[in-house]
Image (cartoon, rainbow, N blue to C red; front, side, top):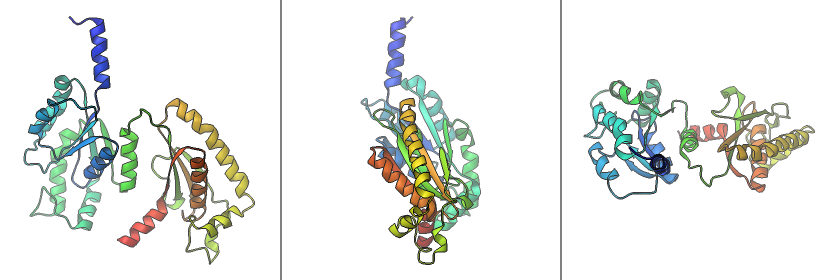
Length: 305
């Protein structure tokens, strides 16, 4: 029988072991994007690994980096039984858990993605994408049921997916609170995962100025117009003061991400101005800040299509 000290040592060794993540899901749901994000986060990423090579990989020299393994149904060695065996027996064999990260997506969205790219579905190369999608969904049911982390990418842009993967998998050690400042249009609803929302529709709208209508809040003329509203300064000062008061508290509490949103009618002028100004203020104060303008991104994407 192991001693209590031995048990404690084994628990510590398990806790100290690098994280190991298996990434899978239906074709077109974003698995390759997630693998690239994990690689950017410092994971050793191996995509489309034959399951027969998994023991050889893990029985080899120890590595201190976390590991991300992409498993694809297109692999000639893929089988549901082998994947489940690898998942269920991992902890017992290697002394650390294997996290199953499943990228999911609605069938209608996958069909649209395959139609837009004119790609053949890997599970129905001579048939319609709809048949391949349905076939793969049925195949993956038992694996999906074992998912530790499941992300539905149906309504996500690649930017959204990157942010969500970072939220789940970015290493906590040595990382400060990351702040994301967003602008959006209320017509399209609130962005996913927003923690704090400020409505700035009460400010004067540059849209009604003909010379400013085609511009947006990243332009100095628009920012000056919005800041010229007599209510702007008091509003911005109150928001800045609230955020600057809360950020240290969130950081001390161990929160890794804080997402702040500014909404207006069209998501082009007032909300963009507020997001730009707050992000700049927080960055100057030393906070780690990223900024996203949802509607501007959608407009750019529509022009490229």
